[in-house]
Image (cartoon, rainbow, N blue to C red):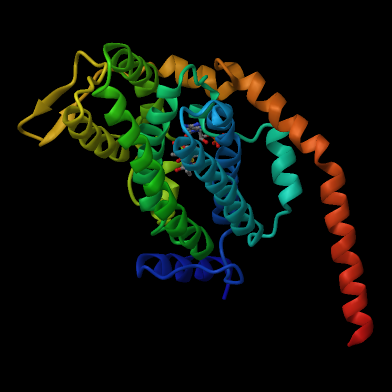
Length: 314
Ligand code: FAQ
């Protein structure tokens, strides 16, 4: 088959809902788009451990500490499945990691905000993991097999993360006046950055059309954002939390909640590296990477020697 015929056959497989597997033929651009998106997703899970990890030693009880430890470890696991899934596309994990630590690769904007109180930990679980679930339930149906399968498992774990955050927030929102104030303050700070997690508006999203054509994504950024707003409004009402948006209004005609203007200038600033915590996050990740070099070297050496031994024996 010539390239045109291969492209046509590839698109037919996608349109039939078939999964593309690592050894199948794929257009170079499909491979590149997946590497970009999957590696950004992996970096986000790893950087995403920092805002919550910062509170493990200050959890308010042993139970809360155990839950938070388990959650943060899960995020590390998500990063690892996603790096492994990205490696099936023929790239090296080390290069991917170095691209975001020392180069230009992105990670989610949301992790460039500070966690100022324990209420932020509740809100990250409820809103940030909640938004991740809306996005990743779609990605669990993605056309690329390894990415879809990684997201199925990730969503199961994110669902526990969201529940623990919502349960804690509900408790805080029905606590003393000071606790209620803390809960509302955290929601006020995290609401708009969470809406930005879904990416720019559809009119300014250069990648969406291509990703949808190839069924990597099946919904646009704005569609996912709307679905997240609709469910969050109901969840907030159920626990007496206010969404900090004076323009939030139920639209009888569309059956959705209309919401106010997202501060997009802030979004673009954050993804260009100038958010409240970008420098600190990268500094912490670089330090961990550099201090862990000896572990990587030892593991590689161990694997090399083991293989030599096995080769000799066979
Ligand atoms: N942050 O053309 P589009 C989590 C960039 S995991 C930073 O619309 P696309 C779990 C985008 O890369 C959260 N950059 O792009 C957890 C592109 O730039 P590029 C991470 C962003 O790919 C919870 C440019 O803007 N999840 O939360 C963002 O169609 C708690 C134009 O954008 C994923 O990564 C952003 N928010 O849609 C962990 C899921 N939005 O690359 C710990 C996979 C856009 O051309 C604690 N990724 N950009 O230079 C996706 O679903 C998509 O890639 C989007 C962006 C939705 C992020």
